[in-house]
Structures are given as structure tokens and as C-alpha cells.
Image 1: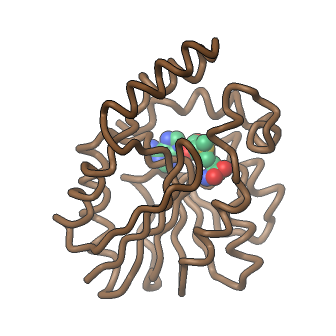
Image 2: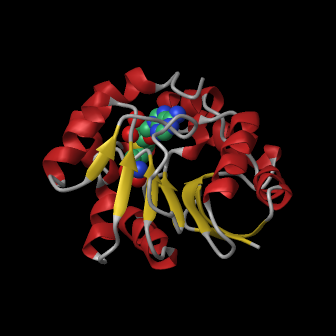
Length: 212
Ligand SMILES: C[S@@+](CC[C@H](N)C(=O)[O-])C[C@H]1O[C@@H](n2cnc3c(N)ncnc32)[C@H](O)[C@@H]1O
């Protein structure tokens, strides 16, 4: 489980960088402030980094340019090809949030952008439990992803997308596993993290969790 949306990403790889730049009107608000969001994830990172769902490598590029060592994990072959072309020196592996080669060196920060919603809430819980075992005290998880303040906020977003005629976005919001901040908070705190949430646009929040 957790890889049920892979076909979409294999198809999207060629046009993905256009979408994040605002070319797809339906996703323009989702990717609003994209560069700033990735820069914030980079800003909160430290030490050796493990990144999940690297896609075409845009967050990875910022992390590498800031001097960090990054191990990238990406399940889509087409996305891996794009990232490898952009960042030939990147250590990039086939894997996903739940199944990945265990790093041989200590990991200080686990990052991901626009991807954690591919897991169900119970898979998210399992993943964070595993990450807690990989990190030492003060180790961090820094995620940027679509989450909603409440289920009602999510319903409002789906209805708004429908009213705007954004059927792809409306279906996506219903099909994938976008969760709520209270649920995410519970997942992190029960696994021994202190967590903060900062809103980056109408959809995306910056989630910074520090292991106690
Ligand atoms: C919307 S893209 C985000 C790419 C990049 N992180 C960014 O910020 O632009 C989502 C990425 O997550 C990957 N993905 C899908 N399911 C995944 C899973 N279960 N575990 C890890 N990555 C997954 C997709 O292949 C895709 O590359």
C-alpha cells in the first residue's frame, strides 16, 4: 500500500515542473509559493537528510545547494529519471515512505514536500513510528503538505473546487488521504515528537516535528 497513485506520477513527470510553476490552473493555488515552501523546508533542516518522494528533485536541489548530504527515495521510475537528469550526483533510490533502504549513516532530518498525503492515516502513523527509531533526540521531520484544519475545512475546499469547475482537483482531494492537523498532531506527539504547523497557502502547511 501507499503506492496506489504511482501511475499518475509516471504520466505527470514530463509536465510536473510546469505544473508547480503554475501552468495547471486547477493546481495553481496548491502550488502557490512553491519555491518559498521548499526554501522553508530547507531552512528547518540540519545534518544528514533523508528525503521521501523527491519527484523531479526540486526540494533536493535546494538542500544540495545549501551544502547538505541527501539520500533521496522515490517510487516512480519516470520521476527518478527526471531527478537524476537534474541532479546527477544525487544518491537516489527506489522506495517509498514505508519501504526504503536503511541508511548506513545516521540521519538528522527527514524531509518531504507535497507527498505524505499518499499514505492513509494508519500508514502515516506507522511511518512516523519507524522514523522515530531512525532519529536521535533533537532529530527532525520537516514536511510540507496539504492538510486541513478540520474535516469541515476539507469539505469546503472540495466544494469550492467543484464550484470553480476544477473536477481533477476535487476528485484528487477526495481520492487521496489528505488529513487534518489534529490527526497529524496526534501521530507526531504519540511517537515522541513536538510539532508545529505553519500555513503556507490555502492548502499546504509546513510541519516541523522535533524528537524529544
Ligand atoms: C506531488 S509530487 C511531489 C514531488 C516533490 N517532492 C515536490 O515537492 O515537487 C509527489 C511525489 O511523491 C511520490 N510518491 C507517490 N507515492 C509515494 C509513496 N508511497 N512514498 C513516497 N513517495 C511517493 C510521487 O511519485 C511523486 O514523485
